[in-house]
Structures are given as C-alpha cells and as structure tokens.
Amino acid sequence: MWAGAEATRTIRPRGQQRGRPRAPPTAAASSLDDVAAAGAGGERGGSADGVQPPADTSSSSSSSSSSSSSSSSPGEADPQLESEMFDYVQHCQETYGKPGLIDFSAGTNGLPKVTLQHPAGASCELYLHGGTVTSWRHADGREMLHVRDQNKFDGQEAINGGIQIAWPQFGVGPLKTHGFLQNMHWSVIDTAWREPEGEQLEDAVDYQTIADWRPTISLYADTDEQWTEAWPHKFEALYSITLMQPDPPEKSDVEILREAAEHYQPWKRRQQQQGGAAQPAAAAAPDARQRRQEPAADEERAPLTPSVLRCLLQVHNCDDSPFTFTTGLRTHFATRDIPTYSNYVKTLGLRGKYILDYGRNPLKPRLGVEDAHNVTFGSMAPLNRLYVDCEAQGDVLFCPGAPAHFHIGNSQGFSDIAIVHPTGVAPREARRFVSIASARAARKITLQPGGTWVGEMVLTAHDRYWELPAWEVEDSSGVPIPEQTPESLQPRRGALSLTEQLAPDL
Image 1 (cartoon, helix red, strand yellow):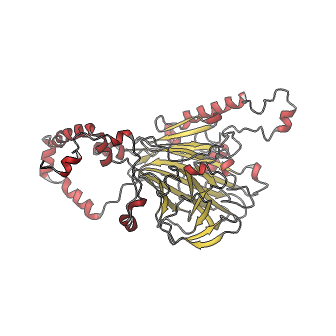
Image 2 (cartoon, one colour):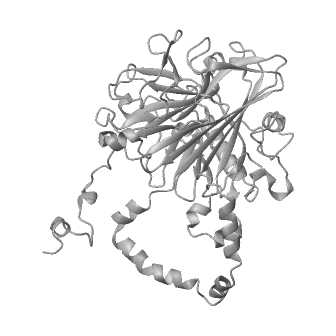
Image 3 (cartoon, helix red, strand yellow):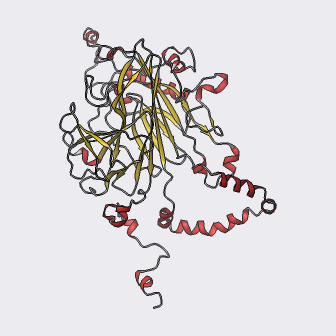
C-alpha cells in the first residue's frame, strides 16, 4: 500500500486488475528493483511497463537527417513523431487511465501529459517530459502555478515553471543548472486511486470531504547515455504525484470513547428506527433555500476545502560505487501583481533560519540569519536564498497576495527552503510569480550502492488567509482583502442597511 494510505481505505493500482498482481512502490522501499524491472524490460508488472514516450531525436541525429532527402524543415512537425505520440497517449489512457480521475492526452505541441482530477473539483496537469507539473487548479478554477512565458514545449529543453525536479544538482555547479532530470523523458509505471468504502459514504455528511479518491501517478526514469559523460553514475528515479485533501485530524481517546458511547444509546437507536433521522434534514431544508438565495453569505461561511499536492521523489543507486547529489522540487507560485500588492505577497515561518545568500555570487554564498517575520518581494530586487534546516516540524507559509495561503511541508528527505525571485533576468514576468523550493542543498547527500533516498514535499492550498500572528492583530495593514468585483459590491438580500444598523429603533 502506498505511503500515507490508511489501512481502512483501499488503493487499487491499475495493474492489479484481472489477476495481474503488481506491487505498487512504497515510500519506505529499500530499493526500486520491482519498478526498475518493470520500467526497464517489463519482466514484472502490467503490459505498459517499459514503454518509453517517443523522444524528439532531431537534435541528436543531424548526420542521418542530412543524408536523407525527405528530412523535415526546422519549423515543420514530424508526422511520424506525431503518430508515435498519439499512439503512446492512447496506450497510456487504455492501460493506466481512470476516466474522471486520471486522463492522458496530448498537450502543447503534442507532448504527452496526464491530468489528475479530484472529485472535489481540484485538478493538476503533469507533462511526461521532465516530469513537470504545469498546472494546479483549486476547485473554483483558480490557477495556483506559474509557467514561464518562453517555453518551447519541444521535448528537448526543460519546461520552465510549475513544479520542476532539480537533480542531481540543485542550483549552479559543474552540471547544467538544476541538473538533467528536468530534461529527461519519464515513462508511466503506475497509477492508483483510493475508493471510499460504502459505510463511509453512507455516514458522510459532506460527500466531497469524505470521498477523497486521491488520484496518483508514478513516473520512472533511469540512467541516460546522453548524460553519462557529465555524470557517470547508474541510477533509477521514481516520481509520484498525488492530488488529495488534507488528512482528517486524529481523534483523541476521549472523542473515540464518546462516539462509541453515543452509538449504543437506546433512545438514539429508537429515533433512527422511527425515522427521526429525517427530521434534521427537513429542518435544514429552509436553511438550504436561504443559502441559495444568499450566495455571497454562503461563500463566506464555507471556504473551499484545502487542496493538497503530494510530490514524492525516490532515487536508487544501482551503481557499484557511492555517488553524491543535491536535489529539490522547485514550485513557481502564481501571485497577484507584486508591485501593486507588495504588502501581501510574503512568506511566514522563516525567521531565525540561517541563510545562504546566492544573490551576488552563485558559487560563493554569504551566510546570514533571517531576522524579519516575513520575506517580502515588493522591492522587486533579485532574490536567491537558501534557508537551512527547515524540517517537517516547522511551518513555512506563503501568501500570493490574495486572502489565501500555501503551506509548504518538507515531510521527508528535504531539509531546506529555497526562495528565488528572478527580477534581474525576467523583470516583467517576475511580477506574477515567486519560486519556492523544498530542497536538500546545503548538505550534500551521499548514497551508497543499493541505497535509496526518499524526498517528500506536501503543498497545501488554503482558500483563506493564515491565522493572524500577534503583530498582524495589532497592525492589519499587511492582511490581504478580497478583490473587489461588481458582484461583491452589490447589497445582499435581507441585509440591513447602514441606517438600520446604526439606528434600529427609527
């Protein structure tokens, strides 16, 4: 069973149907032998294992194309490649798809992508090229990630923006910036989802809250000859993305005993048998009609259920010698226009952390300590910092300028937080996003032969501002307000006028 899946729920990988058992990867796995065998040769697993997405080899086959009189021009699409892409997407949909939860399709320029759709309304899109998450939308359709404007989607260059994988090098170094996993073609190795049990659905008051299907996709990549000269080590990587809702809070022993005692109350049983359960529903009907008549008031009382994106990266050393690496998952959060909403676009939770500031020299960072409550971006000055030792016990929050916030969780493996605001190289585009990464960069990882490293980042999108700290209670100038629209300025039905509020006895 997948890491984080409760024993009371069932996860059913696609390959386990029709008597074809497959062992889904686990976060605590000591090796990736099972998934490696599936991804490399299909010796274990379903029929789609080991099928690689078609790669655009135009840049690496110039010698052969020059001798061919039928070679395509640089701006012309390759019909054969398009056909292979279409066949691969169709193959993935038939083998791994789950309509309404996990759907494969052709993205920009025909590149294969997968869409995870949660029953509560949230969704995310992931391209197999680079394993890059290019979209994460809340239930109201609001896009929460930023994808850079200059992307070519050519299957060669990395897709900049969204959530990118940095490995085996985070930042600048002897390899290309942020390594090469973001340039590789990943193959689909598994999909999974969780079906709520019947009793849980019957007892549910809010179906969308209980029915957390948690669609999941797992991608596989291994040693690529293109990069062996620059990085001569054999490896395997498994990358899993899950779209879910927050885990319900754990109940205390007192709450469990109270619920058990209420379950055996004779009068409660008689009430249920006599149809007493229908009375609360009938009483709630007028309230429901009133809420439909006052949609604005209902929205204020019931914010959207938080959306959670869990990103799990596993790296296995299948070489004969140890290798060293740094890594990270770089999230580009979409924001309001930063110069306009400079008081509101900020982080919380990094005060007192050691800083490695790469702003002046990426190869020789300056050491410092964060002494401010918030990291802000209103000055539009270039920012490139690594905050050290931000493990799971600390909360790092980010406000995109609206009355909402993100929780960035280093659940496992990652220990640093990197913040980049590239106003120097992209001044216009940097008005609309901030990059925050869960990383392991200050202290390098040495992975022994046969060893596996696991890194997990959990992003939670809340449709409300964070709980006010003491200094914001005293001075609320930094608290964002909802965007004013013509609908929000209309008076609500049934609401008291200002005169009635001030002088109710007149």
